[in-house]
Amino acid sequence: MATIAIVGRPNVGKSTLFNRIIGGRRAIVDDKPGVTRDRIYGSFEWRGRQFTVIDTGGFVPDSQNVFERAIREQAQYAVEEADAIVLVVDGSAGPHPIDKELAQVLRKRSKKVLLVVNKIDDAKHEKSIGQFFELGFEKVMGVSAQLGRTVGDFLDEVVSLVPSNESAEELSGTKRIAIVGKPNVGKSSLVNLLLGENRSIVTDVPGTTRDSVDSLMKFQGEEVILIDTAGLRRKSKIKESVEFFSTLRTFQAVERCDTAIVLFDASVGVEKQDLQVVEYTIEQGKPVLIGVNKWDLVDKKEVSTSYYEEAIKTRLRMYDFVPILFVSVLKNQRVQKLLSKALETLETSKSKIKTSELNDYLLPLIEQTPPFSKTGKEIRIKYITQVDSKMPTFVMFTNLPEEVSGTYKRFIENKFRERFGFAGVPIRFVFRQK
Image 1 (cartoon, one colour):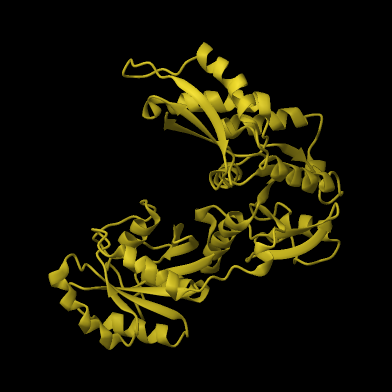
Image 2 (cartoon, helix red, strand yellow):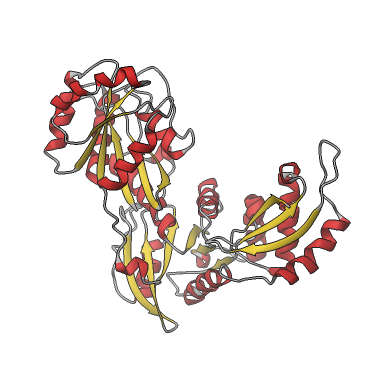
């Protein structure tokens, strides 16, 4: 997945462009400069290609202000990390000295750069674009991030700027398992134990692994790629700029894996961040398994596996379908079973349920407990089928698809799981007009 960094001086519309292309409001937009202090990232798809995009704070060269210095440093990391750069300038203000200085910096980096002149809200403002050619870039185009004008053309340019970098290995069908979790839960130790060799540095200092490390191994007769990732810290704990990209790479690892093992630390209990990692993995449509590591350190007389498991499932709420295994990497207890279970969960995600089985089981349940409509209209569900998708997806044909509540969808999912399982596998129910 190619990475695009959006850079520019403060208040030129970088965050507005970022929000426009990812289709949401992940970045705070304000007319005061310096609102985006940390790098924010998201993902988008265009013309069949997946991209990661990074929104950076406004670049202020040579400033001694502590925030502006931090913003400048983070923008520099973004430039180093990205496959291509989008330099955003303000078309309504003309070239600024900071634009020129930033352009000079970018030209020295030997990175592909697309110069985007923002705030070109209509055709009569397009004449403002020409003055920016003095910044020395071959590719220059105007957009209106606020209105969405020519953003499609901009994304076409992004696709042409970065050639597809999907490797033959990624396309070969080798199963990829990401090992994710907070720092110091034993991710690298787990990978090393499974590999039987020290492929990742292991230390008792949290956060040693700052990048994702892929290792190829054979397990149960087939090749598997293990992705050892940097530890996910809480935002308040992130001190160094490089730690921001540790988090980015971790989430990228989740996005490119086939299934994920999320490690918890049994010695510290269940923390909010543990649950957020599980939720993120599920939201990405990836099968997931929880491995509670350091179980050898827990007093079994005080805390049983059933008690700990119930505590996790209670806090996961609607995601309580995730399998939980208790392991000790140090003692090599149930580690092989952890990997075996992860592969089993991945295979489960590929299961196909016969249409006749779906309808014979679910339709009587629906008739017995029909969906409730706030408008008082009768909602009738007549047919259910599974469709081809990376994530198990089931289409339910109804007369009023927009009237089906989220609560009822969860009811259907719970009943489905009671019968068909799919432990650890995110599933999706889509309601369509019959």
